[in-house]
Structures are given as structure tokens and as C-alpha cells.
Length: 187
Image (cartoon, rainbow, N blue to C red; front, top):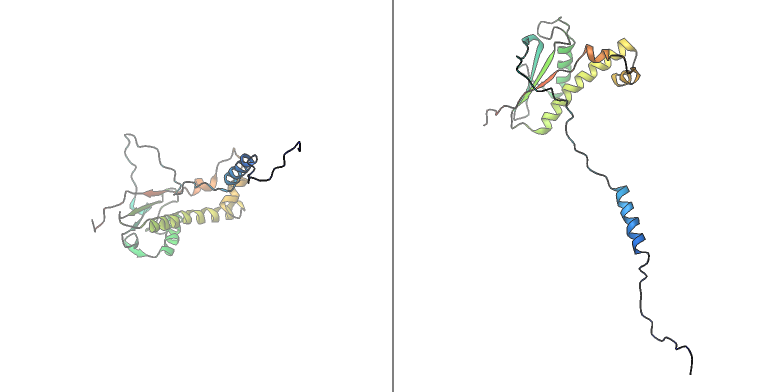
């Protein structure tokens, strides 16, 4: 009689001892490779809340009005304009320095008022707002290039010591007024 009985049937068996390691590695892999959506939108610094102060008087000369209707038409000072022409009109308005009586007295007094109809598309709103901000970027780039030898405003800001004032931003403050959308003519 044999001492050890020989096993004749084999049972299928899956080794589960490393399953925890595999699950942990998969978890690490997904944590490393997964991107998390960041809120997208328009970065804007909102003004402080108004207290019981009267809004300052603004001369019509210093105010450039930009309107977008529900059809996507852009009106600058009541005249139809293409999206590509808005930037040059804003640059002309801000850098006028009192030369043309139809544009701003000084860059510090120049204000761009942007208003839309409620039915205007979001894409058009963003495109026009982008053109308005790009106009100020172009102005600041040119000023930084001609007065401080920097290739653009961003480089000027990088080179600027922490204790020194931003002379470019002081010379050309971004003043874009965003008005509440109109209900529009269509309701």
C-alpha cells in the first residue's frame, strides 16, 4: 500500500494572491493618466460692489459703444462693422490722444462699452470680447516695445521688478464696460 496517494484529478485554480497588486496598479494608472476637467469660461475681474456713490460723468467722446444683435451683427457707434475691424477701431479710439474729436481724449479716459441682445450667440459674444481685449494687448505690446525695448507686454511684465509700478498698464488701462444684455427687438 503506497504511503502517498497519488492525485489523479486536477482542479483548475486561479491564483488570486496578486489580484490586490493588480487592482492597485490599475488604480494608480488611471489616477495618473486621467485628466480632470477644469472650469472653462472667461476670466474677468469684476469691479467692487457699488456703494452709494454716483457713477462718474463720462463724455460721449470717451465712450465707444459696441453692440451685437441677435443676428450676430456688430455695430460700433451705430455703424455695421466686421469682427476683424473692431480691433483697429478700439486701437484708434484708445490711442487717439485728442487728435480726432470722434475718439477719446486720453487713453486713461477711453472706455469701451460692450452690450449684446439676449438672443445673441455665446460664440459671437466671446469673439467680440476677445477682439476688444486683443486691441488692448496690441496697444500695450506696442507701448512696451517702443518705450521699454521689450518685444511685448508679457516680456515687459516678466522683467519688471516686484517693487516697480507697471507703467504700461498705467498708461493704457483696460476699460471695457459690459452692460446687461438687452431683451432685443425680437422679445
